[in-house]
Amino acid sequence: MEKFLDVIRMGVDVSDTMCEGLIHIRNESEKQNYVATLDLLHTLIEGMHAFENEILSNSVLIENSDIDSKSRVFIQSLDVLVRAYEELRYDDIFGLLDKEVVTACEAWNKEVHFRFDTYLKS
Image (tube, rainbow, N blue to C red; front, side, top):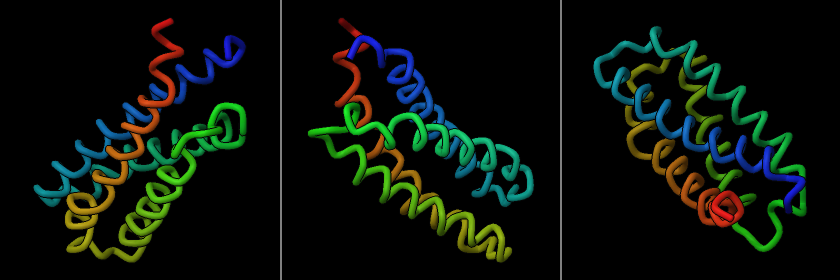
């Protein structure tokens, strides 16, 4: 596992940043500042792609964990959110963030920490 520490750190940082960013987007969406959140959402999606490429593609890092399944649920919720933005369904965005996306992100983040914190503390 030692050779994967930099990748693990990146994965934990991405998962923390995703949750913080999505909470910020949710708060801005509640104020109906949808356009102001587009750049941040784009950055978060790029971060998730990096996580997929570095973590989910590495079977050693995710074996015996629920990271893959939690990631897939989270990615699906992000896809629904992106579609809402693309279709200009602004009325749906806050509800999606509040009830699905942030919840899926928090479950995913918890699993990432559960799996990797031990390696980062040793």
